[in-house]
Image (tube, rainbow, N blue to C red):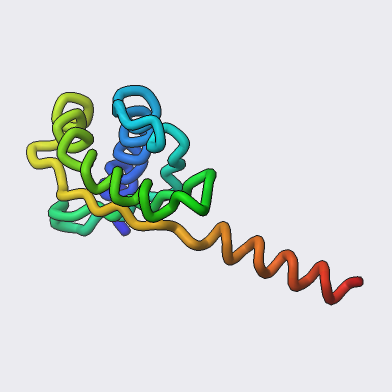
Length: 111
């Protein structure tokens, strides 16, 4: 991955996190954590990986994020210095759950 794409990913991650925490009206989205952003080389698509505090409401929160996608993108136009803002896809990041599962398995083995 090029340095330019890494810098864009970092900027998008920071700005999307700020927008979701401070500017989106939906209260359930306020507890979403952006864990990573992966942008294609042609800047046409950014996959935004997110985790949620409450796993039971994961599906509802992902639907809310889909509804807020247009607002987030419009806010990024003012905040990120790019000619074209990439399309955003919110993806649930399962790596934290997977890490917790592995940690529990190791703990069970040690006991």
